[in-house]
Image 1 (tube, one colour):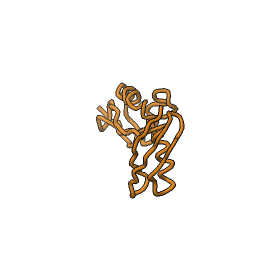
Image 2 (tube, one colour; image 1 turned 90 degrees about the vertical axis):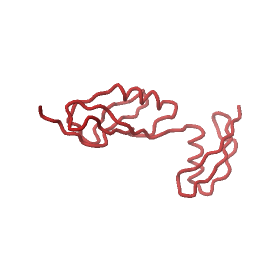
Image 3 (cartoon, rainbow, N blue to C red; image 1 turned 60 degrees about the vertical axis):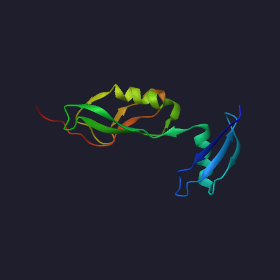
Length: 124
């Protein structure tokens, strides 16, 4: 099935509107880019869209009730809600170091969820 969509490129400040026609597995037509970076962006966005995820995780016994986290790599767009569901179920105990892996291989994507800030443990 041939599908046609217009994608606004976000790679550079120009913001080209790129017309992409696909047949589910390959590009049939690509038109409207003003630089080479737009070609790669449009192909990826049409055939394998991915998004970086940023959110937060509950913290037990920490100076903050939440720690900010992000995906180590862009997540396939069709797995975003599954990944967020897994993250929502996590509660981690302080202390937490920035860069610490919070979830390994989230949603079987080979992508990790990592802390983006340090949270110290509070003494009771």
